[in-house]
Image (cartoon, rainbow, N blue to C red; front, side, top):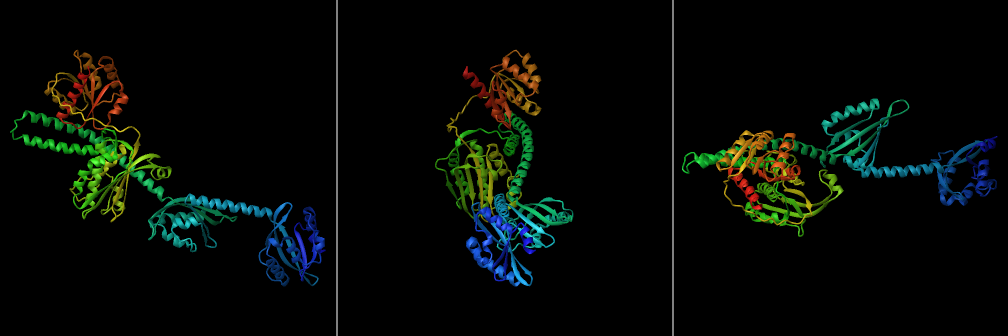
Length: 637
């Protein structure tokens, strides 16, 4: 009866007695032996099982472990886990599992040895291990960790990356949930705990960014994606959490928000500076006219001169506002950064004084950049001034230049940069340094660490705007007590270096030509017209392009110049532009602006003879520029 039952079972079964000898082999064994052309199991009966096992597959399994398991089964003791072993045949390697089970029959003790083919299971486990290994590698590369919590047992499992992200030692046991919660910033924990409890109760997933604090490491931002899993009883029995370190992402996000904030302030500053320049131009102009009509010994003369000096200081401030707004008028040249620094060396040495040494470390074969030399030197001058203030007890001021290539990794850290060749300007000192709070505001307008009344705190904000207007990038590194380093990147320029000749035109500021002035600001138009008329020019004036077109069409004498602040983009302005191109092809146009570069206007009106005068300007500057343009026109004929 027993043998019939064992014969019907699909597993490979061997029955041995208490001496370890084989007394029965089921039909499944016989079929398998016939298929694989191995010794017939019927011949095994009466032989010792361990001898048969050792002769066929013993070299692939631990015979002692198999023997001990069989002896334990004969004694009725626990046999441990099933024994796994490989079996080699013509079909290749297959894996089996053998489980000894004690059995009593008619008062005799036997051991039932059940062999199961587990090849498919082993292959599946191997593939699963490979997938898990790739997953662990992927999580490590992407800086993501995993955590699994089992509420019923309280067991918490972490991946190795989770230890690193949360700042725990992977050589030690997984910390308790309470230890982890203590690392969460109190403000964030107050939000996280209710969300976590809700997920436990409902099984709903949630995502949250929070801060991890530690006495040994800086505060770290992490993102948690919490996914509860329910069992068949609709109860949460696992909570799976994906842990990501997003500190770098948060840092870039903060820089982007700060940049956007500076952009908004910059647009406001640019608008204010533009309007203020119109007013300053009128103030300077009327003061100069009044001065020209006064006796050299008049008592009012000194007051007017003070007005002019105040206007000049205000003009410098508007220039910084425009730099910050990235609307400062630039005169670009292909130049070498080393040349600009060497030109400044005597000035910087004198600025630093005897207790601060100047150290230049310049690239031997520097690439060229396209820049406004005066503006770049102003940036260096501003940083140098701040460095000097930070080294009250003396120190070293270092300026370095180098050629660098910005790769994809660097671009990832600085999203507003693009891969390519750059010239790096590094300016550093070993002064008192800055706190993180100071660094966060150092490029903000009107931020200053100086005591009230010393400086206006706009220099570094203006420097930031100048560098951005050059298509560059500026940032800083600093620690309290360890100095400050500014790093500035300029795009490489492959054009040949320029050797501009200095042209000094000295001519009379009087004239008899006819000039049409088209300015929308009444105050600016009035002072421009008055200044020109005092020097003998015939002046036609208009507040709009439409009015100017009407005047020009009626005026019979030739018009030599037009002074305007328009870009000829609206429909009415286009009508005036078309009239000029058709009827006044030789007219010179002097464009007044405190924002745009002349190249912008040339793109709009490439057929016109265009010149530019930066605002604010004095009466002398206006007259000199007008005369310069008209004389150039006359000399070309």
